[in-house]
Length: 181
Image 1: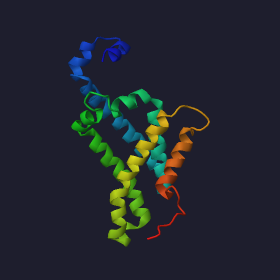
Image 2: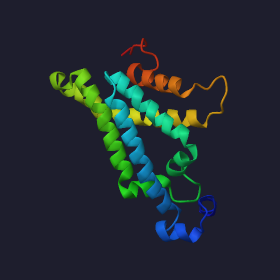
Image 3: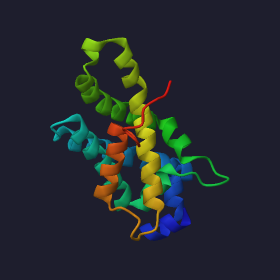
């Protein structure tokens, strides 16, 4: 809190007065940042012509926002050893649950239409129930690993990473690999 207050040119007491503690600051920042991410991802997806383009646009927007402010992203999403989790503070506000619900629906709606869930029935609906949550986990974990990787020849740029994640979401890791059972 002292570092943040110093960077803002004010005293720690101002932050404690408005936010109570670090968890309160994380909660407030999380609500703002998650709202910005949700709007940016929605705007990107609305311009897409296909579900795959929509996924790419959303993944790209997510990575761009995380990359543009990695310290803010880390502050609201990562655990600090020995302290309450940022996710707990943000979850308590309802912002994290709302964010995931909105993103889940943004992902599921075009895929539901593409897969013809209304026509195909329960089997395809089961896929759509679980897939968006798995997709969010893949994007977040791969994105954080990418964000934390040192720059170099082996690290893809943001557009290439977004394309790779989109391929994993749409095609899997080995699309030609068939189940033997």
